[in-house]
Length: 253
Length: 330
Ligand SMILES: Nc1ncnc2c1ncn2[C@@H]1O[C@H](COP(=O)(O)OP(=O)(O)OP(=O)(O)O)[C@@H](O)[C@H]1O
Ligand code: SF4
Ligand SMILES: [Mg+2]
Image 1 (spheres, rainbow over the protein chains, first blue to last red):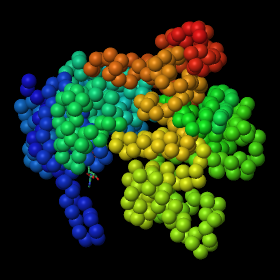
Image 2: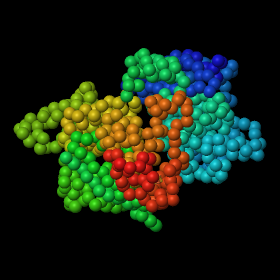
Image 3: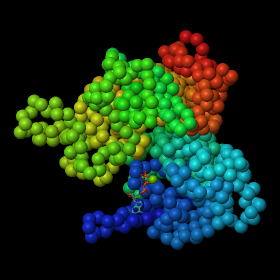
Image 4: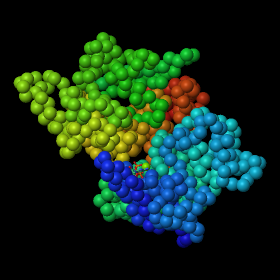
């Protein structure tokens, strides 16, 4: 099958201070390559500082890699540090969704902004789209009049999800987006994500330390350590038979 | 022997126009050497209960209880000074964000040294106390699995990772050999590998030193394999309590069942990517708690009778509070 997302040899370094005058290059992403097929989920696990969030931000275009390519379908969206800006097919959701929502705007305004900046839809079409999307994530059309503070944690995560899928992306990157949720609410969001994937063939990149969620939701797992891929393969195979010591340490818990 | 025995603990918050009952008549008992898990999602009052036990709630909160016995002594009836003395001798507590609980202006050696009580050193002559204390600090660090003690001792909290900070907190907590360690979500700020280390450490302290642990968590999975007994809370109400294994295998309360079933555990025959069992709705905010059984609006079994708070009953070795338990009879 043709992958939706293909990443080839991504590299990213940060210049960090070490000592008073010296500066040192920190290789945060080191030759990262992988691909994700339509309707599939790739889970990324790894210790703190292994580069997971940096990879997520690079994929979503919030940060630019030094070298390497990101391909979506047959189009190249990033090539050796040059980003084609109009790409809205990869969207990012992170842990503190409430902090990323403007408290002074209603949910309707937040979603409308997103459409106005990224599409050519008319006001009327946008309204239809907003209502549709809210219902898709299990909220009510009336919720567009509400402000972020009027929602619970689980509902805010649904709003973040609405904002991410309203542009009909192909790939959704979830950086610890499920971690801060309570178990009974997390189960609902997991179900919602699985439903969206089944209905619209959305692909997920799931970054989480919650291993049972990884096992349940993902088709493939990629294990990162100090910016490198140490293991990459089918979820069941890796859970049943982890090869590298790093994976074994992460899994036997 | 019963270490801690609490009956009908109620914690209320006075606001301008009403009184909110954040914890509603909870019973809790803990034996010596036991690991007891207190499980509940956000807003269930877990941390409030822990703070009420050690007497750390400020006076906006009203705490009442029929009894709160610590080794047979009712803490509620002691003077504040006496209570503080008993609590600081026997009970230690660790928290969710270790780096925020440590003093940012002092190095780790001084902070741990300070938590070692003077009477532990009373056999040592005045002149060698300093070095005796230092040796104890090193021993404590080794005990919590920090081998590189020189470097850690001279560091300040911000120079260390959350995982090391949490181990330092544990070292400080066990410095006075407490009988009970209350751990309030000690691993939420930590990553998987360090998490496992902290759990292993607490487990070994329990086994080697017979130290009881009251383990507070919102994640059932975390405490499943190593707590002896557990107590499930929802919105400040008692849900179900009993031996951990038995609660997992035979939940009587709809909420316990929902928690167990929502874990995508492969043994339970859920196939890959299948929808998980989930309760509808979300956790109500403290200011809008439903009357009667607080699970009511989300409960698949709810009926008219549920507007009256269910009383605690016992069967199959569990205590549970539900009008329509999943399995009837003894
Ligand atoms: N803007 C930046 N400048 C300098 N260094 C950075 C920057 N962003 C990230 N880093 C460093 O890059 C490394 C990887 O960070 P990243 O946030 O990608 O890790 P992570 O795998 O997401 O960790 P976590 O599990 O804690 O979320 C870390 O050592 C971090 O300190
Ligand atoms: S008392 Fe009623 S609402 Fe509460 S858990 Fe039992 S059946 Fe559900
Ligand atoms: Mg991260």
